[in-house]
Image (cartoon, rainbow, N blue to C red):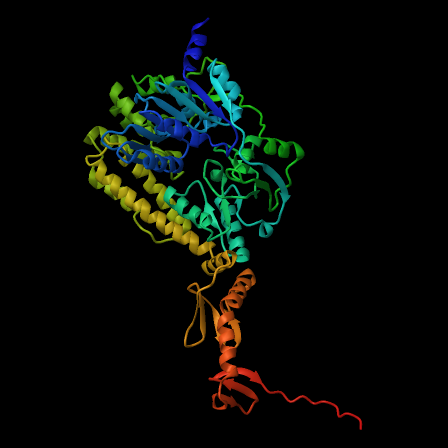
Length: 586
């Protein structure tokens, strides 16, 4: 048995892969298994999911025992025993009983795959390690870890293809998936006009904004969710139907068709637990062919061919030596060298900067430079501009020992404004997320806890403002409130002012003149239907009471005007009309 084979066999000890499609309870199982040990670590693909799992573990174990670590947030009590993290931020030096890594099929992703691969191959719990994900990764896991225990789990509910439907005819509790913010906004605007409103979920939204938008959908304020493929990665939603308004995406390198497995990951969000779900297409997307439908309904997809890999054993003797070590290729079948990532691009630009070369003169300083290259480009600006920001941080760290407070404050102040439109606020959130990441490096600032609070406060204010703008633009509050109450078939709270204005559930819907209801002139289409339906239900008892009072009213309460209008208590209730009829023949 050669050395590589022995190493692969060693990797599989105490490792179990729990594989299956969406809605199989894999993550829930991992949380239960972790809770049974005295210590554990779980890595998740999104900061949003890490936050959710952290909350669930805090409920089980208490806040003093659970830590949260992401690139932009750290909550670490004095003596934590359970750690929840994004995969990129998973601590490598923890000694815990249990380790779980979620969505391990992302090891095949061109951008993030090498991080997942490293954690899959090298991170272990003392007693148990769980790898959770799609069955598409099974052959590669068995190749790289001979003897690994594999457990497959079936989906809890049935997923069925429902064909093509117009956007405005999609059933309630639908999520419509598009692949650019412009497409998402256009569809949300259409739904607002035709159906009362929609929630919006994009990958670029902060977790706070995304949660607030999801809550609109979950609590029934709106019945449609418009999202990018971010909806496919673990968001727990009560969605009955997934409609694809696009089937091409930009993967960081090119525009391409979604793979069947990617399509399945998104479509699988329809239905939850034991409730069945459906999927289909809408807009200009052609219907899915029979083969794709079969794959999606049966959850059978082509296995991954390779996992992305990057050399974890780096040479920090110089920048050039570091770049050379990053060029190494894997020697194991099933792994392929990952394409150059954002951090390598920054390092290559730093290698051309004479000032940086003059500072990065020791192994410790080169290692620090590589650490600063890990600062994410949330703003998605030009590579040279992001490299300037990174090298500016590095220069301060070397020359000043830490990032100066006044310089850091001047950077975050650029984002500390809540005016502007949706795109402006989204850009400011991206800007502040960069500095939140930097503030969470405890050794980069003189008072990191203070700056973490400041950057988090700014992000929260911006997130709340963005949620408010999205709701103002894409949710007709009146229509959504009225339709929700009508569906619930509950008594509607109605108020009629002295001037005849009618308020239902706090929303102005029109005026009541005598026995005649006039809907608000701004209500059109679906909104007008909702207003009239709400008026009919809410005003029924008031009109009945008025009719009763009318029948018992004394004559002096009635006035007959010269034009034939009959008024009661000042309101027009009838009109006398002279009708000419032909005389009957004697």
